[in-house]
Image 1: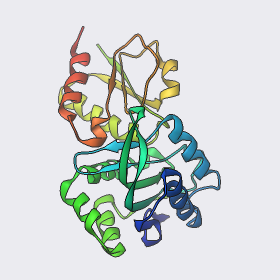
Image 2: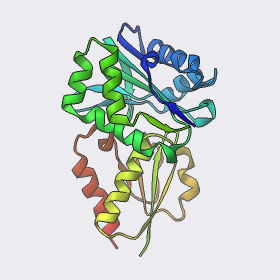
Image 3: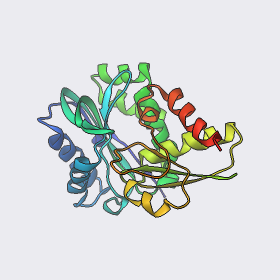
Image 4: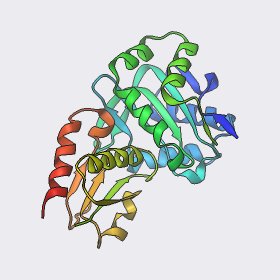
Length: 158
Length: 94
């Protein structure tokens, strides 16, 4: 059985987030509504972020990839928020270093061996000047979904 | 001699997957005989006896008896070559 890992309901465009808790909560809710994660997911992601932060300052954009252990995940999915403002995440290599991010991808990963390609592709997307620029400038969720679908492999083993 | 490389991140599931692929490609390219173990950073100590190198995307506070290389560049794309060179240097030593 194949499932969509991302769809229109898992994308937030021009989202006004107060802080990282706000955006992680929102994206976790979207994943939960789709039946992709358990109720425990949100708290587990926020908790993990305290010890293993996921903020990354890339060449073209700064982004965060909050996620947690597979036990909180039902099936693989990605929820994306392109923020209107920026929110602070700690840097992946240093808790005391704060990074202002405007792109957040909450990752629900169930089985890493099956998702190597998707994870690689996601990281490659975040490093790509043209793609990140398109994502930043888009005012259309459908366009954003199309970019992700093209780049990530739309379907995968559940 | 076969090298044992530990690749770790916070959950051992996401960013270490990306780093593992990079290390695998590197070893293949340079014909390095290695075994790669992917795990959570909290599990690294259980491999301490066999490890030759730790490659990690996350924070490490502990001291290990083997070299530790931060691989955040694999995620940001910044200075990636430098990280690959560092890994290669460790793997080619001895």
